[in-house]
Image (cartoon, rainbow, N blue to C red; front, top):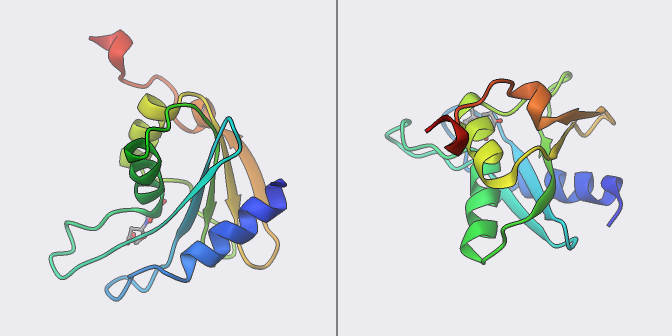
Length: 129
Ligand code: THU
């Protein structure tokens, strides 16, 4: 799958977001090194605090299916300048995916590539224990 196809899958996943409280829909695609993809969207509920981000939904889906090696995460929002993953997601992506590529995208054609290590420098991980 090309990067643009991954972006389109993330934009489609975004449509499934359950974002009744924030009205902020996010879609994600996590690609394994073998090229398989796992999609995610943010899921909110009435407690607010139990919200799960799109990135984590994709990550949990992949890990629970036995995937362990990842290449990139695409995150799609509809904002003019797409936001980067939240701190909690950066931590979990770092621990379970390592230094993957993180692509930010929106429906208007914005595409930006980052390394997770640039978004999340000096992480706490198993080497810190
Ligand atoms: N959200 C994500 O799904 N991913 C991000 O990278 C940032 C925030 C969600 C959480 C919540 O449902 C909504 O966006 C507003 O914060």
